[in-house]
Every structure is written in structure tokens, then in C-alpha cells.
Length: 457
Image (cartoon, rainbow, N blue to C red):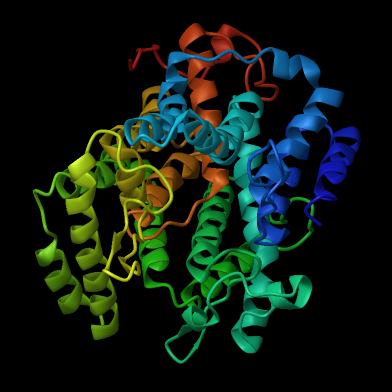
């Protein structure tokens, strides 16, 4: 499956037109159905489902869509992702691990982070293509819905049945007297976030009438399907994902009704505020634990308390090498006298702080937060009722939701980088007044839905 994906994606490029639909199918299906496996291959970074999708798309584009690849140019908007990918090299040099170690870590970061972003920059720089990406998230989550119900009953077994092993500790799938589906993701939390991403995209597409009474390509009634997806989310036994889904949906409705950008700005700022106060050691988060204990069950409060205690220890060690961090090889962990790790990071942000320091954390945060503000620059709330804008409005919100989730969970999702790259590309074209890929939305300058073009940077 892993190595057969490359010719499959090339075949998609040869048969599916326009090419961005082949990109959506090749990338999302790989993320959804390829195994949680890693192959060590000399010279190239570790080969996993993200690199399988990315390399396949690059090969397909090189063979069938080469002019599009040739059009790509780095822009100052891309600086955060470039710095994030270079941060491991800086960390390795600052810790005396050598240039080879730094180059290897940088290659891995490029394969995992820059490649999906680059694909987003190349193929999703128009409202039409971003709308199709949003529709793809909806259809992808819909395909996962019956599989979730299978694992509600059987327990997480599909990955073992098809690939021969469980992707994570099986015990972590037990929750509240039942099971939390994993399907072909790394963890049940990752599956939960995938489902809320698709449901939010589908609801916004339906409300904006970009999706009619039938799901595109599947000939299923849209409204009952959305109801089933929401019921599935309620049964996923993931309180955090459910809370983020409610917050994101309420934000969409508030922005549309009240014409205020405050909800999206708040969602974007929460991770910045948390990382700034926690990463500098200014806030120990004890009051957050008390609030969690008062608002939820004892188990959930204890889980949060455990994570915060670990974070406090890891922050203290990380700040001893605050600029570029400790580098790789678990050097940022805390070990006892027997060499056993006694404190393991849970959140993506604390992993970034420990390995790549404040430099890497700032680059990572800006990579995912900046596109949200770029979207608001292009489309103030007064424009969100335009169906062309409403169809893609979930994407910047999902970037913020993804960032909030990764304050406590290290659950990477490359589809968010497709969105970030696409929004960044759209802004680059917007700032110059040209829209080369907007095939269905504008025929002349008078057709633009954009307002006066202020520059954010």
C-alpha cells in the first residue's frame, strides 16, 4: 500500500481533471487509509503516509502538470514555514550535534511540513480550489463515519485487520465504558479531530448552498448525512474535540450574524497567549486545573493535571536552552538516574519548545496563525455571507482549532498545511490583483469580491 500509492497518485493525475481534484483525492485518501508505518530508506527522509502522498503528487505534477510547478516562487509570506523547517538545523548546531544531524532533521521537517504546505501553495490559491478542498474534508469524514460505528462495536480493529498491528496503545482507545474509534489514524484523538473538521466543512457548505440536497459524487441526502456525522462526533468520547467543534460552529454563526471578527481573532490568539505565558514560565496553569475539576469529571481533571505537571518540568528544562532548544534524540526529556524518561511531552507546542526553542515555537505558531489573519484581511466579516467565501470559511477556523488542540495533544494533521498554503497563495495573488486559478468566480477586475487591498506585512 505504501509504495503502491505513488503510481496510484500518478494514475489519478492522468485521469482526473482539473489536477487539484487529483491532489485532493491523492492526499486525503492517503491520510485516511494508508497505515501508520514508517520505512527507513537511505538518502531520503523517513517514508510514511504523508511523504507517500506528497511524493506521489510531486511525481504526478511533474509528469502531467509541470508548468504549475514551474510557477512557484517563494514569498515573504512563506518565511514562517521556512524558518520552522530550518529550526532543527539551528538546534543541532547550537547543541554541538553537527551539521549532518541538523540536515537530517531539516529534511524530515521539510517532508512532513513544507511538502504539504507547498502543495497547498501550488494547487489551492483560489476560492474555487479551496472550496473543493473543504468539500473534500467533508466527504473524507463522511467515508469515515460508518467505520467509526464499526469500531464503536468491535473496538479499534480495522488497522490490525488490514495491516497486522495496532497503531497505538490499545488501552488508550478504551473510554467511558466503550471504545474510541481509531480507524487508520494514529490515535482516537486524531480521528476525532478529523471528524469535526469534515462535519464543520460540510455544515458550512450546506448552509452556504455550495452543497445541495445531495452529497457531491456520492448521491446521498446531505442533511441526514450531516445529522449522522454530528451524532458520530457525540459518540466519539472525546470531550476536547466536541468542545472545539461547538466553539468553531458557534464562531461561524456569530461572525455571519453579528458581522464581527472577534471569534476568529480570539481562536487565533488563544494559542499565542497560552504559549507566551506558559513558555516563559510566567503562568503555572494551576487555576486551569481547578477550573477543569469544577467543570468536568475527576478523570478528565486528573488527566489535565498530569499534563500540566509534565509541562512545568519540561518548560523549566527547555528554558535552560531557550533560544534553539535541545535538538532531537529526546534530549529535551527529563530522565531519572537509570536513564528512564520521567516526563514526556504531550502537546505539539511543548515538543517544539523543547527541541527547537523559542525560535522554533515562534516559527511554528506563525505558520499556522498568520493564514487566519490573512484570510480576515481578504474577507472581513461583511463578506462571509457571500457563498464563495462561506464555503471556505471553515478552513481558517480549523487552523485555529488545530492549534488549540495541539496545546495538549501532539496530533499532526497535514491537511491543515494544505489549507495554510492555499490561503497564503490566495493572499499573494490578492495583494497583486491577479487571480490565475479562480476559474469559476471572476472574469474581470469588476467581478472581484475583495475590498481594498491592505497589506498585512
